[in-house]
Image 1 (tube, rainbow, N blue to C red):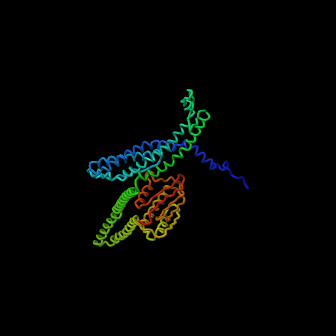
Image 2: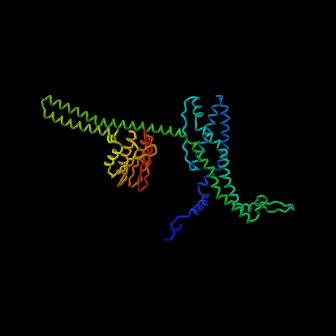
Image 3: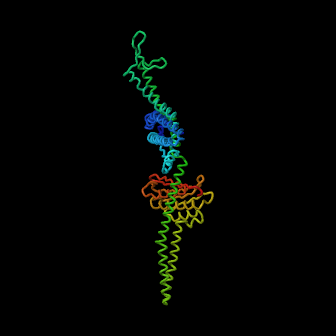
Length: 443
């Protein structure tokens, strides 16, 4: 048997040593100090939020009269402002990014003003959050800041005892140093004072872990009550998808119009003129020249038909008539990089999904051929949940990004979103690169 590998040989610390190291290090991390500051602010903010909630409820009860409704709208705006303040603190201190909820559009007039504020779901959800902040803020302040304060106080007790000793006068009129007292037990010696410091140090070590419970509950509540609702997120996504679809359709129409005008239309005009010249030659009895012109016209007709086929191929590739698998195989055969194709779907997807997957694969293959420097590629279409997943991988240099300037991937991602899909890129420097396109099974 060979020698057993210990932590010194493997370079890995034992699990118990790692846990102890993390336990001792946690009070000194930036995350713990941000949590302390958040817990310190939680109590005053909870009290201010309680005042705003009480005023909102009072004016809400009185808002049966039209004269009080504008005041209720103003207090709802105050509640929404408090919600924005908590989102800011969550981003700065808890490192929790919460999107700002969208507001309904304001119609003109007093009714529009009231509807804009009273009909704002985000404002009412802010009221709910501020109501829950009262008990939550008290617990966060006690566990997140109170234990820290006691820990620092106990840790510094020997110094405080030296600077300002605690003395009492006994029955004989003699003053004695008594120090800190717990149930009649006085910490009036240096040894006992150091014991208080040890307790303070222990409190500082466990305080970050005690504060995690209330902070975790707050992390759970914040996005659900102060962030956008699932309905509003879906509505915003649909609006964005609609804009992309309109822009994509307009760009496609402009491209078709330009190709027809600059290509087929111009060539058809030239063909008509050539046929007119042939007709003129026949009228003059020059059959040889007329035959030559007709021959040129026939060749021109073939070229125009081929050009129109290429134009139609940009709208619906004829290769898809045989299915997605043969279409991708044909596409891979024309690629400059050797490409393997694998298509495993339970059935044939809908025509829009097939078309989107085909054009996405075509653009990704073209981009890889231009920029990746890869030696091999692979294209796969697999079932993923209720939809389909396109995977395009290469062994190139990597570094592809969606947010790069002039990135074709970004434009492709926008087109994929119009089909309610998602495009992601995993391309570390040095490769390999994997681009994933997830689409619903049917559109």
